[in-house]
Length: 83
Image: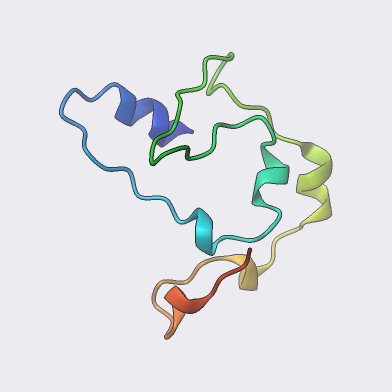
């Protein structure tokens, strides 16, 4: 969301990359009210701070797992679909 806020304030900004399609299936559980890509765009959150809340129970349910990260330097990373 930090990147969404930053890019929304850059007048000549064009493209924000997202790797949601390759992320872990529980990603949206961590920030349940965060904007999602809709028709190729994000809505900028308007809540306090960065505009999203973290679900701490979901965070505790998924401790650090090195295999859960997208490693773009590993062979076949683009074929890894976690959803």
